Image (cartoon, rainbow, N blue to C red):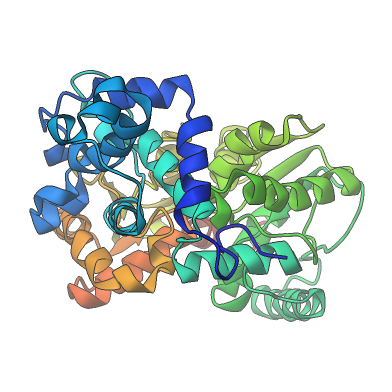
Length: 440
């Protein structure tokens, strides 16, 4: 049996992609492909193009790589006079070009859509290109490996439940020792709680202190909550690949685990695409709703502050702090102001990047780019705009509520010698907590 995104040995690579282009094209995407006037007003919105100044990196050029194939198979002129219309046959060379455009030059951040003169959403078109590449078995190996791991084991890093339990037990013991509070707990696999807090596997492996910080916040808020040792993963690399079938299967595992635990709210840890894929895309993938609310941890902390369930002392975070907006949380997910309200209460000197909110630049690591090692040099180069934004703020701390962004920002910090500290929102809030819970 062959996994999605991998073509069977000896199979023609173009046939499944061509079938998708011929029969799987929705009206919205077709309208976008018909409407691009190639004015290139979108060029200066794209962090990839602004970094490399390669005409092939403009959103219009990327749309045209798909539009040329569309014209060949969906228009009379493209079928009869392809040399006049620029229509192109879908062959192996065309798939290579499509992969370069869709995975190597685009993070699907959506910023270009805000500035299109005729209202196109280039990310929607890139989504079609990626779906075709899934059908043709041309997904970057790193992305596909994460998809396979999640489908086979329930999380993208293949972390067994025993390791989760051991890590959480160690973190709980460490929290009790460092806070001197024996009542601090990190509940695990506890049914009937109000909240299930779902994690990014990288927190368990590499960033466990972000779990500890969230635990302190839940404790201070006197929340009824639990973690889960299985099917805990909020990441969804099939969402990045635009492999809807696999994305739905990955989302289903966590959503059904939350349902089995009987929680009222599924709280998505700090992850932009994890939030979007679960909150907005999963109901479409699965064609159903679930009997609980899905919120970002950012939104929940904002509620705690507004309701007086936690108290914060901004003087505990005296260094200048700036905020990076994850594209999938902010521009595509609509969670824009909660993190700003929280930081204004948790840090003494919070300053914005310019531009910010939905107009902020992608860090360069989105869209699965971090997992596609073949594009690493281009990814770091595309992050130059973000590095320049950070430097202009004069901040010593960069907060971002997304572990994907954290990984990219850590690399940019080193590559561009920014000399800043990269932190989650949970870590900053935990440091600002006023006892009841002693500071870590």
